[in-house]
Length: 305
Image (cartoon, rainbow, N blue to C red; front, side):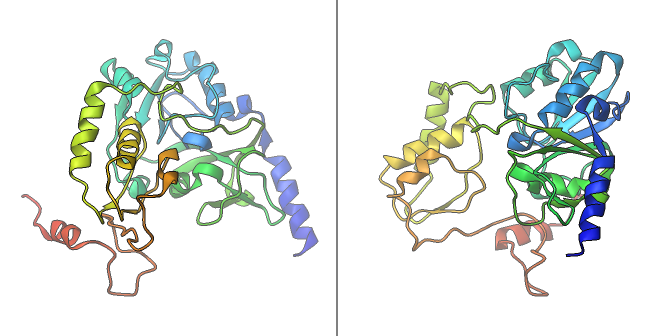
């Protein structure tokens, strides 16, 4: 490693350092802002944008999941910012989102998570991502939710990283070089375990949700392969599976919770099988496909004219 290169990246980092309030000034009226979600939610910068919300009109903030690592203060979802901040949800459709939609303060955009950036309907004025500290080669890891945000980088006019030493360094396609970044904001707050409830409180399971989960359990046979999402209903289904008597189940999932660690109903003899209604894997041999026969049949159906 050339020491002069390392010193150059560090100097570039220092030149791009700004406070959260200074970074928030990149957001102007009518701007499309996209931020990462969950444990990768950039709390300091979003709070700074919200503090100046009443000076702005028609700012849209899009993100996959609102579950920040701390209670936001001020909270951009508060109804007092109607007309100033409009929320676009790419992932969550929980009671808070539904209430905001009914009041005209938010919208929900159905999408396939792995292709959400590819089909995003417009370019991003300001992209704000959480990241772990820069390494000596000048690279930042995008931390606990990095796989979602990386695909938005080519669509963004301004890229802001909220660098937090509590963010983990994650391997894979979720790294940015300091030369690709416009602004760096230093933050220092711990990441917290994510609640199953969008409000952050203990979940309350209704009789209706338990009845729905019971119907889902009836659809699951021994030797099934399961995929779980996040939320109350998947959690209830998982807990009910433990006492259901089902055996030799496989799991292929991006979301699991504490219930799965009992493990007695999962067997290594039944590996999970990925079925993804998406493009063939770039790592698959040329001419092959990773999609299921049902997905291929769906693709071959002629489009309506």
